Length: 449
Length: 141
Ligand code: HEM
Ligand code: HEM
Ligand SMILES: [Fe+2]
Image (tube, rainbow over all chains, first blue to last red; front, side, top):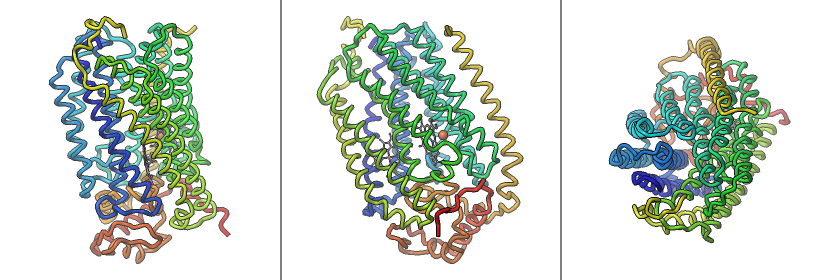
């Protein structure tokens, strides 16, 4: 690392690893419930497990994004973070909000709106937290020597993500209005502004790992985020087909969401071609695997599996079934889980000074988690297609269909075990790196990374 | 070849134009379509109270409504027509977990009034014009 204040990133990554572990535990609780073993019903009924699982997901990803920003911005702007102390306070308050929310979910303290279960009073704490974070990032950028495209795209993504949290805080009496604005948060996050964050981090990693000229990488970054917004904003319409608004959305949503995979295809082609083009052979092979991996798997999970059910005629049948869960897992994993893990893998040697570039456990972590996740996606997919057919075409009762497809959840749990083993290796590596220290400063080690 | 500044114009221009269209379409939907398609005139205090109960208990954490939610328990958009008032009230007021087909629902033990409110909410939900969702099972004999 080049700046002492970058060390704060480590603690965000550590929080991220902890929350990921908890997320997986709650995933298993739900997988078992689907298999007919709802043994924790009294303390953790399905809706509690689900709210915890998805909220932990969002918080560990956000914590990873924040850590990445605290690492990237000083280096890109050539300036120490304006206040490290405030960054630590922000970290602790993020963890605190997360813990309060998750404990609350076990005591019926929530608002039942998928992904936005955090109660409004706690939302205000989130707002304060995020404003503090953005304040530090923006001030550092503002006072820095340089404002690169990479840092601007990343920052723009973070600022827009914060702004888009607000529509989710308005109260509505009409369920259709509620749903309409819930998508301003959920859809415009994952198929809009989070892609800017992903693109910014990916560009930074590619500049560092491949050594390709910044001007070239940043030009393509603009093209990719341009494709993202041009398709993704109007693509919101694919959630407006069947919620009580007009039929125009069938056309708008269908056409524009069908273009959304282009941004992910762009991301995959971008990463692979920059890797081919690069002269520099960076020794951090594991970071390279994750970086190429995220670009490719996001195209599969978000791009192709998203496309699979985005046309109105298909979505009419698959809407709100396990087919959605299939896509949700591989998309979140490929695009956002893997970019966070790519960044952690890249930055850990630089933060700690230990060069665990090509270890056995690092390689196992990559392959086991990805194979496990692809298996889980297949299990959800098979269960989903069977559900759609039996329930929506043949017209069997929901509960009877669920009994028919129970076996696929045993497959899910098996693949999830593989996935968890991979994550176990990843966290083992993370712990082996130890904590960041000033001896890892580049000016001392004289290694250019 | 495309230059970096052209790429930037593509990004900024594309964003502004599509966002403007999106806002226009949204405005039209919310002011013209929603009141009609959701029969906003039927949105009584009782229905709204039912909606609050629905949210307070995170029913969407197991069920779907308008196809949004979780995949552990049945889609409820048309439940008022499918099951009728008495069945729904029995499920909501039950003091032991409702479990007609194996899976357990949380035992909410709601009061008569609360259950009536939720039923009113479901009745209103079922009348919303959803452009044909949920689909009719066309292979049903
Ligand atoms: C990284 C990007 C993406 C992520 C993380 C993601 C994740 C998700 C999640 C979690 C849901 C369920 C949301 C809910 O019901 O509240 C969902 C729904 C959906 N996604 Fe994506 N998605 C991504 C990209 C895409 C893309 C590019 C497309 C289209 C090409 C797409 C198409 C859809 C559709 C059509 C639905 C609605 C499913 C339904 O009707 O039940 N997604 N996505
Ligand atoms: C051990 C691993 C995991 C297991 C067993 C698991 C299992 C599940 C189950 C059973 C559901 C609920 C489906 C329902 O409503 O019936 C779910 C939801 C979800 N999980 Fe996981 N999960 C795991 C890991 C992950 C990971 C690593 C991610 C993200 C990278 C993830 C993202 C999600 C999302 C986004 C949803 C909501 C999907 C939707 O509403 O369409 N899960 N998970
Ligand atoms: Fe979407």
